[in-house]
Amino acid sequence: MGGKWAALRWTVAAAVAVAVWSAVAMTGRGEPQVPCYFIFGDSLVDNGNNNGIASLARANYAPYGIDFPDGPTGRFSNGKTTTDVVAELLGFDSYIPPFATTRGDAILTGVNFASAAAGIREETGQQLGARISFTGQLQNYQSTVSQVVNLLGDENSAADYLSKCIYTVGMGSNDYLNNYFMPAIYSTSRRYSPEEYADVLVDDYTDQLRTLYNYGARKVAVIGVGQIGCTPNQLAQLSSNGVTCVDRINSAIEIFNRKLISMVDGFNANLDGAKFTYIDSYGMFRDVLANPAAYGFDVTNAGCCGVGRNNGQITCLPFQTPCGDRKKYLFWDAFHPSEAGNEVFGRRSYSAGSPTDVHPVDIRRLAQL
Image (tube, rainbow, N blue to C red; front, side, top):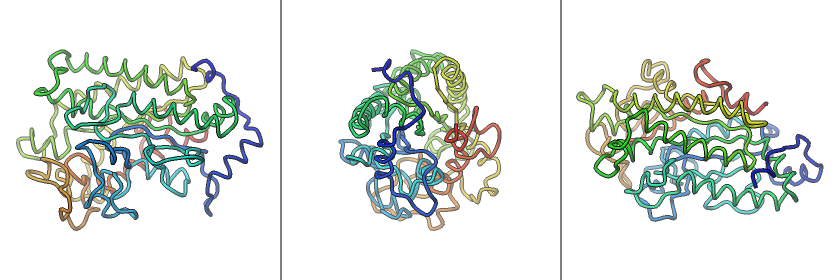
C-alpha cells in the first residue's frame, strides 16, 4: 500500500471538506489548526487503551485523574497529559480519544493509539503483561486508515487529508526502563553496549516510522526520551542521596536521542513530502531541574503519590491520598509527570521556549507547513 500513499495531493474535494466539517465540532476559537491529530506512545500519553487488557500497567482508578474532569480515565497523571495540552493548543475542542473506544466519524479528528509499557521492541514491558507495542499501534493505525478511506470515499482523498494532520510519536522510554536497565529479566544490556543498543533501537524505529509515512503521515513530531535517570523510581533505587540523577541511565538516553535527530534529518532529506521534527524532552527536563522555582515546582525528586523512598517504588496505590498541592510537584508518581509538568512539556513542544527545544520546528510551526 506504500506506493499508493507516496504521492499526496494538496487540494481536498468539496465533498471531503463537507464530510470533515460535519465530523468536527467547532467552538468559538474557530477551526483547529489541523484536521486531525494522531498519537503514538506509552504510559506518558496513554489515555485508556490499556484499561481493558490484562496488564499491570493501568491507571483507570483513583487517585489517577483526581484533577481531570472525567476522573480516572487511564491517564497516568492527576490530570492532563502532554498530548492533551498539545490538542488544546492546536485548537481541538475535546481531547483525542483512545483507539479502544473510538468508532465511526470520530476517527476523522484523530485517535490516540498509545499503550502503557509499550516499546519499540516487541518484548519490552512483557513483565507487566499485555501491552500494545509500537508495531501493534501501527497495525491499529493501518486499520484506522482503511476506515478513513471508506469515510472519505477513496484513497487519494484520504491521503490528502492525512497529509495535513499532526502525528506525535514518543517511544523508547520503556525500551530502557523496562528492558535494557532491567537485566534480571532482559538480556539486552549483556548483548549490547549503550551505543549498540541505541543503533538497534533506531534501526527498528526507522522502519516503523517509514511504515507510518507509507500510510499517509507527513507532519510527524518525534518526541525524545526524557531524563529517566531523574525519575523518582530511579532516584529511589540508584541515587545515593535520593536527589542526584543517575548518570549511567541518562548517558544512554542521550546517545539514543542524538541518533533520533539524525533519523529525522534523514527522513526529511529522503522521503517525498516528509516534514518530521524532533522534540527535545530531555533538554526540557534538564531546564526544569536546573531552575524548578521558575516553573513553580518545589519538589522534583519525589512523586505526589506512591510508595517508599521518594514515593518511587511503585505507582500510586488505589484510592491512596496524594499530596495536597499537586502543582508544586514535577512528578505525579514514580515515573510520570504531574499535570503541571505536562503543561510545561506540552507547551514547549507546541511553541518552543528555546531554539534547542526542537529540530527543526515546533509543533505550532509544523501545523502551518
